[in-house]
Image 1 (cartoon, helix red, strand yellow):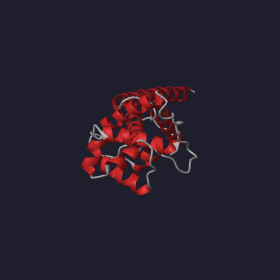
Image 2 (image 1 turned 90 degrees about the horizontal axis):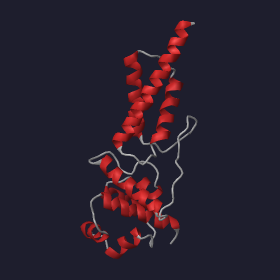
Image 3 (image 1 turned 120 degrees about the vertical axis):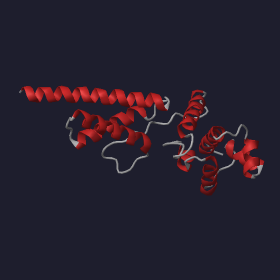
Length: 192
C-alpha cells in the first residue's frame, strides 16, 4: 500500500488512542470489527473505503475529513473536544518528528479564497473577541480591515502546536495590539 494508506492509518491510530482505546485489539473487540482488518487499516496495509473512514470517524467521534487528509479540526463539537485535540496534536507532532508522518503545509486562508478548511470555533472566537473589544472602546474599524485582521490572527495561531488556553492568550494579545494601533491612529486623525 502507498504512503496515503500509511498516513491515514497513523491518524486512525492517533484517533483511537485519543478516544481512550489503548490498543487496536480493544477497539476492534468493542466495535465488533475483525481484528486483522482493523489492524491492517491502522498499519496502512489495507486501504480504507469512504464508508469505512466514515464508520471509524463516527465510532471515534472524529471528523472523517481529518482522518482522510489530516487537515482541519480533528474533533467535532462535543465532550472533551479540546483535550482530545491536544492529545492528537502531541501524537501527530511526535510522528512528524520521527519522520513517520509528513509535515503538512499550513493551509492558510486568504480573503479571496473561494473555499477553505477553517476551524470555525477558533475563527468565531477571534471575530467575537475583536468585535467585543472594539465596541467596548468605541473604536471604529472598516469591515474589510476587521476581516483581514481576523484572518491574519487565525493564520498565525491555528497550526501552532499549543493548547487551547495558549491560543486564547495569543488572541487576546493580538486584539490588544490591534486596539493600541487603532487608538494611536484615532489620536493622529483627531490631532490633524
